[in-house]
Length: 101
Image 1 (cartoon, rainbow, N blue to C red):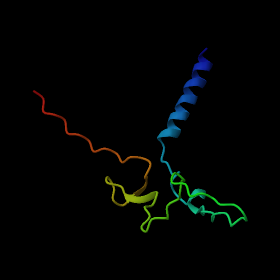
Image 2: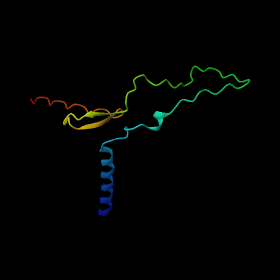
Image 3: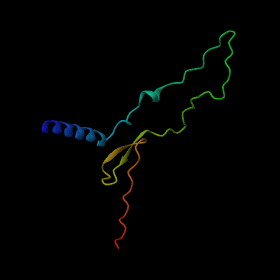
Image 4: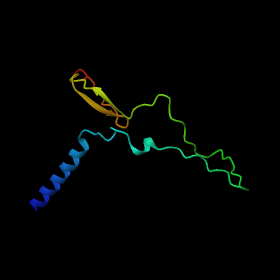
């Protein structure tokens, strides 16, 4: 019984520590970022392709792309830096405690 509980708690701690660590999943270039749009199919004899208003179109890349990850100074120690990813919200500032009474 104790061995099973020890194994289960160890597994839970391992999983929780994996979620709380520093995430570097946004560093580097991913495969989809280098994907290229294929040209429309060539002309085929006796085939007219209708223009659909609901067709999905890939927009052109932005003029000033926003990086998915950026290195920022640590507010507690400006000599250190850390990586911030766009898909992880920034930490909220601590709210002051209301006066007692």
